[in-house]
Image (cartoon, rainbow, N blue to C red; front, side, top):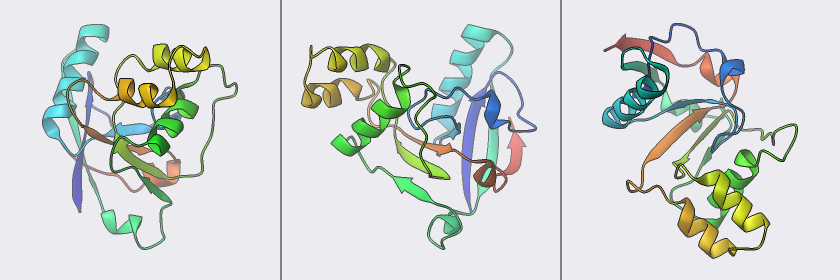
Length: 163
């Protein structure tokens, strides 16, 4: 079992994927990190925007479900062209309805906060794909995230404790 963390401005008792933004790095999903400090940073940022108190929600997950065929799992182990193409499809708000993929869980690096601008620059020909990939890299260094993209995957998350 691994412990994963979700930073918020509230305790998460029930996860409703329909409340999640569809235009995120890996699509509409519930996002978690194996890094508790990263989750706290996100919680603090949410408090700055929405108010409340920072909360790090802890969940346990059996990572064997990634390898035993129970879950369809996509892993990006770094900032690659394949990762950038995937983020582009998921973040491009001109795609209506939003791009959908078939993965239960996606794991990979976080894109920087200016993805929309970089998508527009690429679409308008102001930058090439190599520069697009360079600009998508998270400014705080390589930081990974898990996106639980289906209700089936979310049901496998076990609440652990809140701090």
